[in-house]
Image (cartoon, rainbow, N blue to C red; front, top):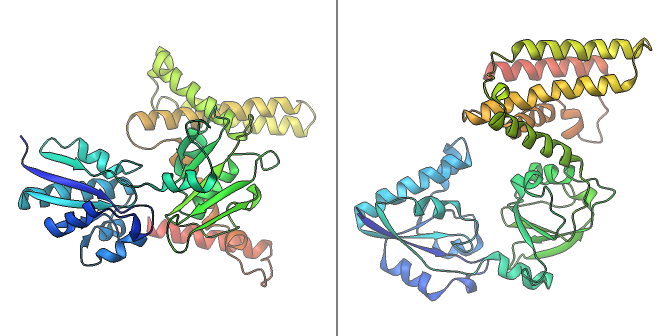
Length: 352
């Protein structure tokens, strides 16, 4: 049963000039809500209520989007019809609109708008159909480019961590020059090329940053990990033995493989076993990490990306002398580094 209506309009890619008359009419006609004020065109609508508070109070972006949709539906039921304004176009990379489509208690009307993609194709002088461009999410870059050769437009490149993950997904020696597109259509628009090695330190990203990668090298360090991940998922789906395993049932194998890695290192050091033995045993241990992550993913607990992000973030926190040190200060000595590690670890445990 339909109880209310929500009309969604887009704020365009940057300048207020890209906001349509229909969107202005919406604001004058219905109670109107902004997804966020963090967009150049939103300055004109500062009097409107936004959902920026949810970004600070929620634990994940998924929770933010769900909370926005719940509040929108509640307001629509109260007022009958409301308007909802989103950055860019409502039809391009707008997850809240996808969630609204699933709500059967509302009627959803969408006013098409100009996306940052329209300006991107112009700035790059590219026909996306003719060039067979693939658009990927920067936060899922490594998995989404598997088996792609380009060209690729990468959206959602909004912080240094995302850029670092993207950079590490390709071999810098084979990676092409990248075109950075920022704040297209605004007075602070920037379009420039940068070398792959400088991707996560050559400029300051923001929520209006995208990358143009004209070609993806055929071999990528991440390819093997992606293929192994897919293999484990297939084993869990098709092999009866793998499918029945749980975290608990896998404990003996985890202990066994860890012990065999230690033995392989000792034998290699003694000259009793070639390095291939260590490669094999590390692979067996890696498989344990993969299958535990697959079990957790199937149960909605976490996935391999969470595991990788967790250890990456931990190593960054525990190595401030690498990632957050003033280059004018001396590098700590071994004893200072051990004490620093212990202090940071204790702080983390106290917070937990």
